[in-house]
Image 1 (spheres, one colour):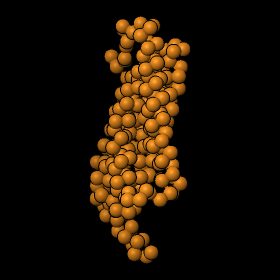
Image 2 (spheres, helix red, strand yellow; image 1 turned 90 degrees about the vertical axis):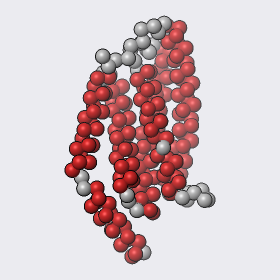
Image 3 (cartoon, one colour; image 1 turned 120 degrees about the horizontal axis):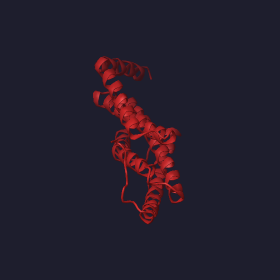
Image 4 (cartoon, helix red, strand yellow; image 1 turned 60 degrees about the vertical axis):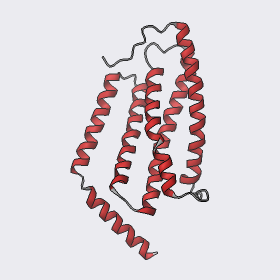
Length: 196
């Protein structure tokens, strides 16, 4: 079965676990709030990057945390919304999980914008296309987790929904001529630069 069952979770253990999760999620959310506010300033509002930092460095710093945060977000959500983790003790932990998922989705959007700015300066490559596809997979996966929670879907549903997402991506990648797309993008981008 694809369901998490906490057979030995007593009410007191559940209360302790809820407090630990609430404090951990509060810390995670505060750290990510700082990161997302910096992204709002440098990416969305268009402020200049700090002295000595390039778009390449800024893009790499934003892409790497996605792997860890996606896994943490998924794990915490599944724990907080499992059948045994319920009751008034879990109210704030669940609210913080919603905020955490929202911040992770915003981080994915910011990472895509970082990548777009990076590509506009340094051109498009196969690895950068792969990075964009990976970020989209992570973003859709986080949205599927949120949908699972909101609609009380099963773990089996989440597993198959992500499987279908990956299958669609693989089929798209199989039939998509990325080399031609990259060449045409870089050619068009070079013409734009030459006209400036």
